[in-house]
Length: 337
Ligand SMILES: Cc1ncc(COP(=O)(O)O)c(C=O)c1O
Picture 1: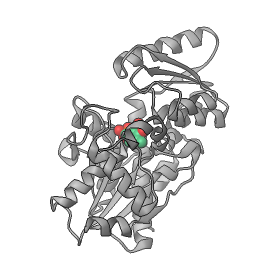
Picture 2 (picture 1 turned 90 degrees about the horizontal axis):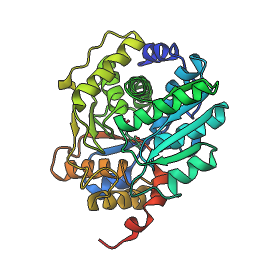
Picture 3 (picture 1 turned 90 degrees about the vertical axis):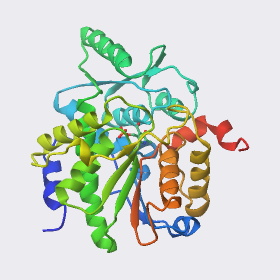
């Protein structure tokens, strides 16, 4: 049996909807490696997952909206930061599936009708920008709205943690099985997989690599400071293990995740992130996003420069998408250093 086949079989048992283009490509980036004098670098192109400019949330929504449809929902309620990639992909997925979509977005410095917020509107979501910070307070707004919609006779489903994070971990366990097969085809056995995540994406990478016994170690770069992140990530991974019926147990010590590249705050660019974004665009013709993947790439570059990864290593960078946000950050991106 091919590596990962058993895990892919288990993933296929979880309720899901068909949203994206999978498997996403795994591409080598020789000019980026050369520019950095560093390891072999491959990019896993989740930014090419098909729906609505792609991104990691397409794979995740395959299962969250699968869960919603399995429960008989006709309406999705979601919300996050005003330039949320997750909400943009949810709006588009709802359009594709014929579901109503209500978004409640937290007002912030990027609540402009550009980038993701523009696309939310074009995809036909009912959008309201609210004066509530995202996180638990915004979840209250989402659940109150769902209660109102229910009174109106709709069947709402709220996308929120911890369920959504556990299903994201299922999605990225599947992604690891896919990568394991692609590695065999390419004849590589990576040492590391780097990604921008402090949630289900990394939880799935950890569960998947541990379950398959891969050499590859996941390294997560947080875009935001999240309380109790190791506890949250390990519990999402273990919930996903239960859903999948695998007997892997993930502990906090299995998880490597840094806050060191966030900079001033979530959603504010860093000089190193902008430089990393421009370098990848210039050497490989691949666009990163300003809020997540640019900071993650800045971390990878820093680790290469500090000798944590050498020329003999192979690293996979999981590109989680987010590129529409570039258009909401055009001023910062072209400003002089
Ligand atoms: C482009 C992009 N990368 C990474 C992430 C982080 O994903 P996670 O939920 O795994 O922390 C997000 C989340 O919204 C995202 O939009």
